[in-house]
Image (cartoon, rainbow, N blue to C red; front, side, top):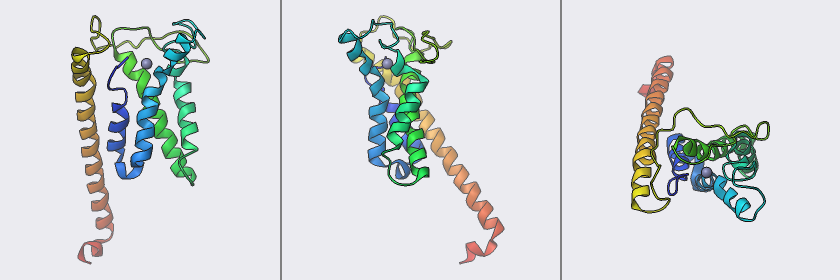
Length: 186
Ligand SMILES: [Zn+2]
């Protein structure tokens, strides 16, 4: 698990999508949803399931179905209009899904029950590049590694997405002006 930066993909997604679209409330909800799957620790602490059980750590809260369900639930509160709700639901589902994806990239810890409730098996990603074995769960070293392996790639990906958006907007406005030459001459 990321100790510090599970919220970061939500912020990156909001910036990449355009914060004028998401707004601060949805962005904050996304950051909360991106952290929420680790609430499963509470279920283990309360003794409701063993650590590696379907309701244990990285169990049902780290599944694709949970992300979709949480996204759909959050979308219901997004205000009027199906497009707005669908957009919010998609954003929130992606934010939630970013959590098991980040966990899955770390080289330590048990794997996620991605396919719950259809399959309770813990499935590891083939590619687990983030080196966390031997790194304490809290502290400066942990923070530095997360900055390097999560923060830096997210900043690069977000900037790439912003560049793509800017390029796409330019192409669109050129195409529109090309169809209507009078548009550029007032
Ligand atoms: Zn987790």
